[in-house]
Image 1 (cartoon, rainbow, N blue to C red):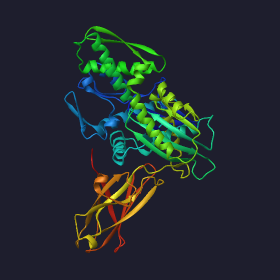
Image 2: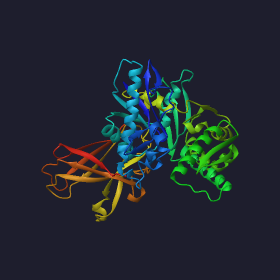
Image 3: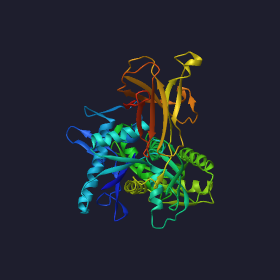
Image 4: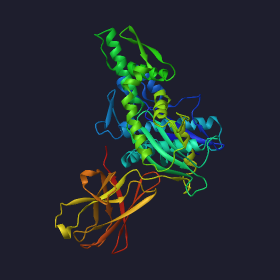
Amino acid sequence: MKIGIDFGTSFSLPAALINNNPALLLSGGQYGVPSVFYYDRRQDILIGKPAENRGKFRPENVVRNIKMDISNPNKKNFRLDGKTFGKKQIVGRILGEIKQLALEEIERKQLISQKIDGAVISVPAAFTLRELNFIRDAAQDEAALKVLGFIREPVAAAISYFNAPSAKDEKTILVYDLGGGTCDVAIVRSDKNSKEWYKVIDSDMKRIGGRDWDKLLGELIKRKCREQNSDIKFDLRTENKILAAAINAKHNLSRQEIFISDIEIEDELYDIEITRREFEKITSELLQETMRMVDKLKDNCAGKIDYIVCVGGSSNMPQVRRAFEKNYPDIEIKLFEPEKAIAFGAAIYAEHLTEENFLHDICKFSYGAKYVQNFAKYRDYKRFRIYNLIYKGDALPTSGESISYHIDSGATSTYIEIYESECTEDIYLPEEGTYIGEIEIRGLKNSKRGDETILKMTIDKSGLMQLKAIDTRTKNSADVEIQLEEY
């Protein structure tokens, strides 16, 4: 069985197609698996709800939001109760728990297939090549979970929406996905009579999510606590209580205008009254930043948008709907399966992954190789430029080629630096992009000065990089791989 996994910042969910209908692979009506990792020497490693519960008493032994720390160079390792854990190990253990829970549900439902053949994992709309490779390696190395591919979260939600019984074909939707760590937007068209059933017109992402709303609401709660007791101290355990109270208040304020949060700190009970108006005021700039991203995407879209579809748990907040109603009064707004849409879409895509006409997505970044610019003209070995091979906006899969020249005879290998950027020019300065790693081409035989090696780079449908190298004089293929720089 192929499954889809919504690997979320706050919660993760596995899903699969059962009798051609998407269904969660979680028992007991679970909302999802908290993306939480816990360790102490007595309990060993705990994942999900047990980790969350234990972490209330030992918050110093908890790792949350690991998905958003993948690219954080300041958080390479986590020291928990005297033991060090790497980010890849933590991500792998969370994905491994999701896999195990899915297997248990498959067995409980007595489905024909009793094993998982692989998973499509959803990722934010602008996760980088290094982040994709990191998640793939963590899943395969740490969780023994074969990654069949990736799908961008708002695109997965669009596929889920268009596969719902009430959905209409030949429509263009704007998906607004406000999750725990990112806000992702995509414009997707469905047309099952065309060459591509689902066509991504554009997508974008901000690293803003529900946890940022939680943080600001937590600061408001702390201010109100200080108003009742100016000497109050906030240690790690108290901060954890404040965060839990903020999340609970946020959920309740989506249904009512006023919520009173009861928080016990150092044996004293604090009754904190929070109004929806207060909450929306302190978080208004966060919301407006996501709306500016929506405006930019919509302005760049030439065609008509039929619906705005909101997904992601944080889209339940009333301020989201009101912002869309104010900015786009002529477009119908739909709240669609906020918690499940992405997992369902990933599961549907997993079953259609090999079908070329199913999904037409576009490359989110440009990828280029670093070479000396026109040495014959400038006579300067230090005049480096980045030559784009792959361009942002290209339809996936997409390929490009570059040629490198041997400076000396007898070389058996060559190295090429690779850059990722949003530059769409053919040539640009290195400082305008981001160095992501180095390609090594090995196995060159009897090379001579001036020999050419052709490097072919391909970005596949999942956004991962494939490489091939050929010596033009000998016509021999060379061994080639990329060593991505670690965060």
